[in-house]
Amino acid sequence: MKRRVLSLALLAMLVLSLTAQASTWSLSGRPKLSISGTTATCSVNLESSDLDDELKVTLALWCGDNIVDSWTETGYGEVSIRETCRVVKGNTYDLVMMPVVNGVAKSTVTVSADS
Image 1 (spheres, one colour):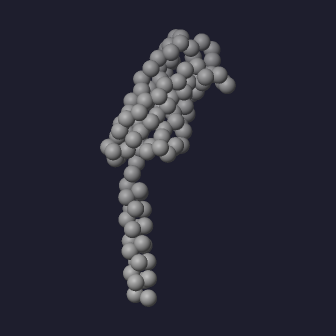
Image 2: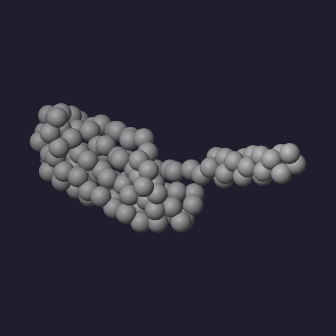
Image 3: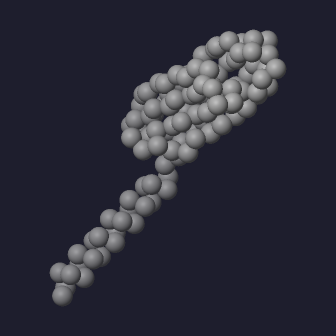
C-alpha cells in the first residue's frame, strides 16, 4: 500500500512539474505585410522562450483562393523571413503565418493589406 501511495505521489509531482514548465513556454512574433505599388513585403520574426525549441515557420501570401508565393525557414530559438513579391493593384492580400514548434503545429495568424 505504501509503495502505491508513494508511486502515485511521485507521478503527481512529475505531472505538476511538467505542467509548470509548459506554462512558462511562450512563442512570440506576428507576420507583417506591407504593400507599396506593385511590391508586397512579407516578414516575420518568430522567437521562442526556449532557445532549444526547433522552429519552422511558413509564410504564404494569398489573393483570394490563389496562392501568390510562400517561404519557409527553420531554426532553433528564433527564425526570420523577409521576402518581397509582385502584386496586382486593386486586390486584397492575406499573409498567413503557419508556425511549428518541436514538430507540433501551432495556431496560424493572418494579416491582410490592400494593394
